Length: 254
Image 1 (cartoon, rainbow, N blue to C red):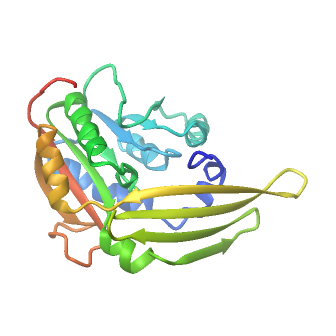
Image 2 (image 1 turned 120 degrees about the horizontal axis):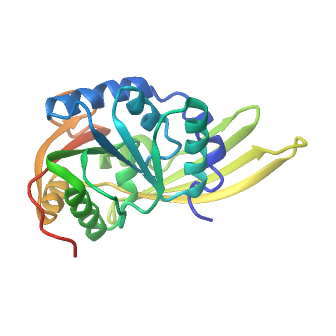
Image 3 (image 1 turned 180 degrees about the vertical axis):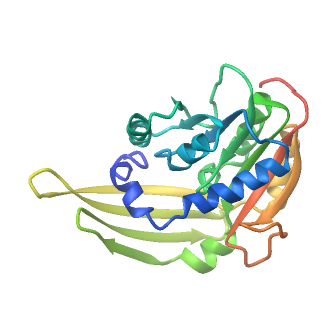
């Protein structure tokens, strides 16, 4: 089963502990520091559009890209309720296409960790570089190897809600730096019965130097890396980091 096919309907319920407004405040601060205060912003791996909507309310013209039709359906239902002018595209970030350039691209909630092959990471960076305005920036977050190894690796997490529950098992392979999520969902259906979904997700931990190398291969400038929600350099025990890459000329598409 494709990742997020069952999770989409209950994703927001289980993510209700995420302070999206605070994340958006930090992100907008970074965007402003790198010269982006308005214009078109691309949200890669936008999911159900929670952050996309906040950025749209802050005055950015938003484009959301995600490969999950189910997640985008949730995002478009939010858009219908809010009335915000957001363009959603059902595309894989490894081969997305736009009609023009954007002032900035963002990708949060560890979406970039889902790019598990280094060559694909370079491809994403190359595409982002191609669609950024001159000097535009790409800001994204990453879960770190420390987080996978020390905080969630080899653990089982379970939670029960009135209309849904999940069992989430993690396994981190040190050699491949891949974290495997085995997710079992129980979602209440009309009539009161629960439907079971089984999904497997894979994420890869990247080191800062790997990101720097991939950015350089893609023709981008590695501008900065920060420990999440700070302006400090990442530490060995940082669980999440933010990376800022800058457009520095077009090299064409492979």
